[in-house]
Length: 435
Image (cartoon, helix red, strand yellow):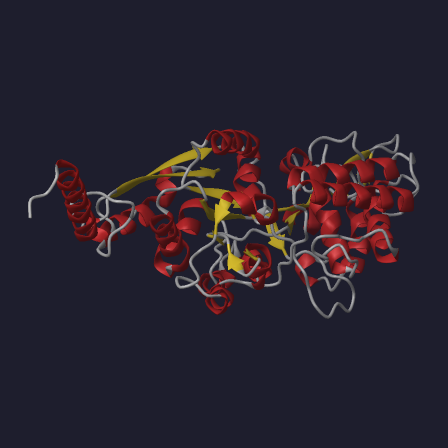
């Protein structure tokens, strides 16, 4: 039977489609798949964006990945300023030209969840996540029954103090303290004033706004977490009750000239500058600030202690501030991207290169135990295990709200309870805007 011209065309097209499908499946020609079963045959170029770090920071991870995926190239773009990073990332994602892999803050998952892709559940289970990392990682990155990001480092707020000024005052060092009560009793012993009563050496940078204390809002939220207020409730933080009021009152008393604890006001210089010049004995800050402190004064004799806890606290709490690595929903190579993140963050040998390069504390449990005797990072390593976050949703916006609350109280513009209620309403508005 002879075929018509139309039938011949159909058969030719059908045969070509079948041959093309076979060739795609065999990997002879490119297809819709982003990877093959053999990583050595996979070809791709991915981009990775981050903040604070440079490409050298990730050299060990990149070199190791190249041995598994020799034909995959990952290029890194680093930003030194978080604000510039956030703006550039937002613009790139909106334009559809964003990176395949990028960093987000630990509290940003609910806000970014529509832009990021979870790890395949066959690659990392919830049980494995809990075994590998401290509890706070599950709290922050496990959302809607999926894991959305993994960290290389977990930083926490610690007490950093000038050892020479403590010795000169002849008072017990913070490592011997039992509670915030010891801190409260010690601060007045470390304050010096001039003939006019102006503070020339502050006992601690506490009580002011973020204008002069970069971590002031973080410290206040830590106090609320520690004393049991409901600020830790996901989706609707509540801290305007009695416990939240106690935390705010405790914090702001250090900026009240009529208080015995008075040690700070916002007419003073930046807390980190003052610490570098020996004008304040204690500050609350992160491990990431240590290079900056050393740059201000290479001869400063400072030591690090855990943050104080409430008296008779059953569950100690530290406050984290860290970043996780996530995969963009826009990527063409989700499997490759997640393979890289998993190998970078969960392989202890590779992950350990990050604290070695940056001086920041690690995130893996196995490494945290190794660093518990490190002279600089031991406090941060131990505190990562007790770290708890709260639903800030937009960290910069939350800090502004808390700073405004403190300013209203110390300037006597608002009663503490009224300022608390206003701040709680503002935080919940931020959450509603960022669902």
